[in-house]
Length: 221
Image (cartoon, rainbow, N blue to C red):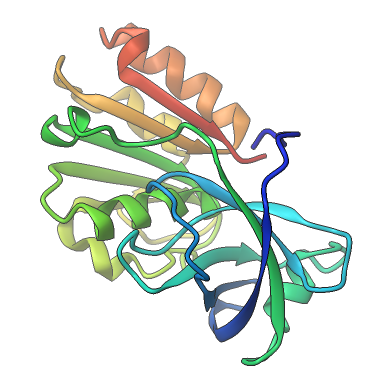
């Protein structure tokens, strides 16, 4: 995700909850402090008092009175490990929002294909919570079976591709699954996650007839 140089006010927000999903991922919930964002945008978060900050897509509903981010813990990381180890009452520094990976009002009425790898599922959770009327399918690729990140929320609209373990809905990479997927011509496709997946999926969707204007991307790593 691109780092922007635009300066915006940073807020100090108290941590409300840290919800562990797997050994390496957690959802960090903290005060909103009046910060306004559109679903799909990201914010810059760090532990209060530390100069290190990182970009995270907002995971929570745009109407909620708190903010949530989905964090993948990196043991030698300068931010993610510290965020996952926070306790309620401690504080984070929050800036933003940033980004243009958004669902405009026009797009909300179209058939939607959400494609994610790993924690790239975050903005889609915000989309679906904020706009419950969406007609979408969510295809999520992970290495391991337990990396579904609260997938029960999406019901039968969620499709899990697992590359390194048995199980899920499909054994293999997201892009392998997309090769055989029927994509109606009026679909608006959103791609979020690993840059290699995005490049490959973008080309696949173009080959299936989707124009560039109907393919929206957000690179995570």
